[in-house]
Image 1 (cartoon, rainbow, N blue to C red):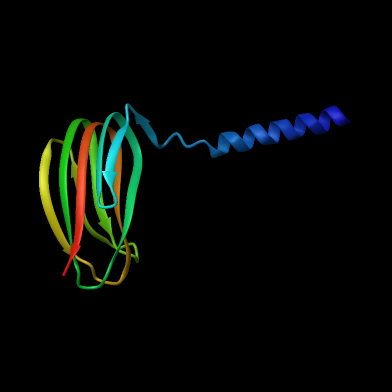
Image 2: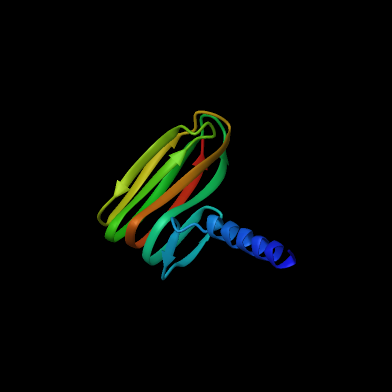
Length: 131
């Protein structure tokens, strides 16, 4: 009886570990640097999600500087407000440098979401909050 209980416990533990594994966020050759308002990353392969959150007040301008290198796949970058509304998004499939400005529609935490879609390359993203 004790062996059956131990075996059941071990199988339950292994099943829980397998369920907790997230193969949807894969980063190979990942090298990251940055600060509270900047993220500079290079990678051999990235398939998953990264995000940075910051506070902005309604009416403030959010300026985003993006320098993206895409060697394969694509990279999606979006700015999302506290209610989940997408303020700006773009999918990069080639090397691009761009500056975008959006106005925060409400007070609260806004998020920059970066989604790698079987991509290789790098991104350097910085943002500022102004009036």
